Image (tube, rainbow, N blue to C red; front, side, top):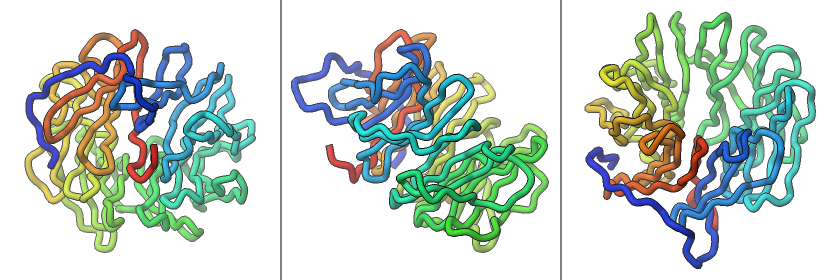
Length: 336
């Protein structure tokens, strides 16, 4: 149950004498350019994934939690890298003068989807987890492809195609075949997110500045609108049981960014973080019990916090003078 209420804050002190068990990764500007850190949310200890002069961004865990996939950017070139969670066995998976990045694991960890500009426009490509068997995902001639995510069964990907500033949501078979547009409406559609059973997509429909959070049933095209009162919505994700859609929204009265939850069947929206400062970059744990996010509640730079949604206990994970952002939970199936 994703409850909203006042929360108590604790700050994690020095790491205790216990093994480092990373259950989070996040991005940090401690070294100037963005670098990837792993963190133990229990002890508060954090460690850099690799010591690099490059900019490392857009990191994600492998489904088994043993590896980290990320984009390494040096000057004007970006490539996809993978490393063990302790930083060892670093490997560059792509090698091209154009942009390669925004890499996402398939649910079984065997395939990686990523964006590449190697043929001009930004298009979606697939490759095996070792970097081999490179192939284009779609056959769309127009537009840039982005905002991609795998279906829970790994058989399809959802993505956004951008043509002359018009954004439309699509799905495409992972094993080849023609992509399908999610709707035929002449509006902008962004941030598609799969329901746990893969039968529905949540997305943001924007027309004339009005951003609607919608859930569409893919088999029938029927949809329902959620969270109508909030003008800005992004970064969508279903809870593991499919009953909630967690998202980043902007309260027009503030205005400020907060993390909200809307019942996926419809109902009252709840502010999960509810603070005068900005809260963003939310990631819900697989069991739905904890929310990790970036907050500006302690000053001018973002720091990482974890909120226990049942007890409302709030932990500050990072305590630095540099911006810390985009935290991601390690999959629960992963070992320490």
